[in-house]
Amino acid sequence: MTNRIKIFSGNANRVMAEEICRHLQVPLSVAEVKKFSDGEIFVEIGENVRGTDVFVVQPTCPPVNDHLMELLIMVDALRRASARRITAVIPYYGYARQDRKVRPRVPITAKAVAEMLMAVGTRRVLCMDLHAGQIQGFFNIPVDHLYAAPVLLKYIRDQFSNVVMVSPDAGGVERTRAFAKRLNAELAIIDKRRERANECEALHVIGDVAGRTAVLLDDMVDTAGTLCGAAAKLMDRGASEVHACCSHAVLSGPAIERLEKSCIRSLVVTNSIPLREDAKRSAKIKVLSVSELLGDAISRIHSEDSVSSLFV
Image 1 (cartoon, rainbow, N blue to C red):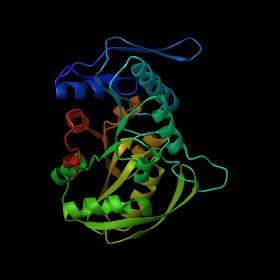
Image 2: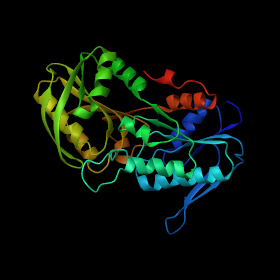
Image 3: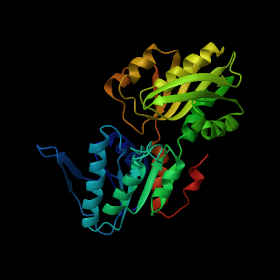
Image 4: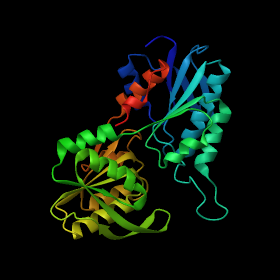
């Protein structure tokens, strides 16, 4: 890598940023990100960035509003410091679940976040496993959309046998079918009805799971209600054991308590979001790193090479 690339990080996931820098053999650039006593965020770039290719690694994970504002203010500071191009590296894109109007008088927050990122001077976005692929279309700038599939597929191949891949809802069928095809495994679907936000009722299983290792696949796990309800249905239908794989471990509210009490044997997640303390103590949760994948994408973007070769 040349000295014309610089990588910055806010407070959301500095460990990931450091891992990316080690992989690329570049130092993590210096920036002070702190709060005033009233909660306002202050950013000061600690080195010259004039004419450089800048990447800001910042998942907008909980506390979402703080980390989103850190990202926006860092991009604004870098633009005013004459950075040549600013790429927002967002392993987890917050506010992505509100990507369309499902009822009258509700916002489309995924679009609002995209508008804010472009308004402050972001010239490219690198993200991973968006909740909905169409969010790429909310940007009028290039978006590179990576998938954690290479990392998750390798783990599933190495750890499990006699697998049936299970989508916990109809919206995830395409993703789960792609995994099943590459694993030469069967596909099953949970028919689910969501009564209100963060609450759902799993109804029944479509597909044969009896005597097999069921692997639930989703893009994120938030309160874990969907996964735990789906796992119970799978065991009722005769699955020998149930595991879950998710790209983003939001794990808010009662998620850890639900996981510990559930029949899920393991939950495999990536390091796109740093685990909260009780999640780190859970023996059921296994974290896989996607830092090298993101690092390779950053290297290819900087050198103007193809990023598509990183897709499965």
